[in-house]
Image (tube, rainbow, N blue to C red):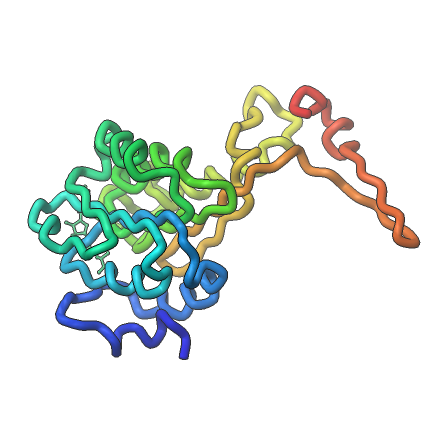
Length: 235
Ligand SMILES: C[S@@+](CC[C@H](N)C(=O)[O-])C[C@H]1O[C@@H](n2cnc3c(N)ncnc32)[C@H](O)[C@@H]1O
């Protein structure tokens, strides 16, 4: 039985608060991490129901950090986990968490879901994500809710911020340095997945893209695609 999909039936007295459709998706997406001693951070504890879920998935060797703004969450710490109390939109707090517990292989933002919270956390925690790590932002439907600082096509929303990440990931293909300059995230973002209410950003440190041609088992590589656009400076 898939671990996450089946998990609600195995919960104890701590309430888990997730959207149902995340669970089969996490089974598909996170399967390579099951049982691995990874470094993990979740923003948002609430009743602590996700803590045993993540611990059971990764195992006792994983380093698990959970943070919440509510001091009452401190009592929910489980053996083998760390609970930190603070505001996910406070850069000084995020810097302390990062220096004490980072870097991380997986970060899940299930905190306050307001635009400035999601964006500030991403900006300050992305540099703390290891190569090949995943940054998951849950409940991104709040990007469409004015009460959370969002609204359809509101440039301040997290969804619009994430759409900009798509451009930044591709920014080394630009010919227009003035309007669309090369962004450092071109070297860091491997992919971005948009699901209903979830945005998942994969870190993959990379060189400028190489085209290959292969014939009879012989491969040759070229960066001509970028050279013809005058992008030699980024090699
Ligand atoms: C949806 S609940 C978390 C649910 C939990 N991750 C689970 O899966 O069961 C959201 C939590 O985010 C916390 N929160 C709200 N604003 C926050 C902020 N600015 N910084 C950190 N945590 C915040 C709330 O106190 C609440 O406990």
